[in-house]
Amino acid sequence: MSQEKSLQTADKSVKALFANEKVKAKFEEILGKKSAGFMASVLQIASLNLPKDIEPNSVMQSALMAATLDLPINNNLGFAYIVSYNQRQPDGSYKKVAQFQAGYRSFVQLAQRTGQFKTISAAPIYEGQLKSSNPLTGYEFDFSKKDSDTVIGFAAYFSLLNGFEKTLFMDVNEMKAHGLKYSKTYSNGLWQTNFIGMGQKTVLKLLLSKFAPLSIEMQKAITADQAVINDVDTDDVTYVDNSYEEVEIDHEAERVRLMIEDCKSAEELTALLEQVDMTEEQMAQFEAKMKELKKAKK
Image (spheres, one colour):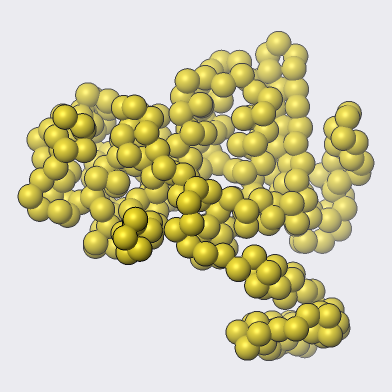
């Protein structure tokens, strides 16, 4: 019998599922004395941040993944998150399910646990700080040369105790293109509310997955990130952000939206209007951005 079937309850709520003795035993098996506090934090997140009709087992499996990785579920700490996602079903209907998301700090934490890293970090790069870029030898930054508050990209770096080191840099356009390509929640999720955090996490995750020695925990975190966890014991996951089309994205409309958002002056915005045939919705965004820019200029 699968774990999902064995842990079902008659009441379909998250609270009822977490009150199940078998569920409690599962968390105690993983976390020991910390299980009660961990489960309480998950229930608080579910109560405050998740829809009432979310599929309870998906919440539990996401929580179990965080527990297995020994990462707290607390939005203020930035280690791991449980977020809601509308998953399209075979009959065309939609079901609200929980998606596990690893935070920036989780990858730093998991790297530190291996005992192989001397240094690991990621940071937004501001205008003036990128001094040189070479695809073979790497990048040079001067963090004392911040010309403005405009973020031009993100960089991640690590060095190992054996002397190996690596840096990865992605400019803002590359980061936005990555988010747009791989995240179907790009327009209304963490990419919009916490772009700096998502940028740091993304560049560090890509650097680690390509060049770092990966522990079992790190491999599990990379695999589970931005996925619906079907069964934590078998690493059975569904990649809702880059699998089948749960949500259709109009990439051209999203490109125009980002271009409007990135305009820094009324003149630049007006020039964009002459280049792009905007829809009614985009014109509304254009007018709102124009008001914002004119107000900031006063």
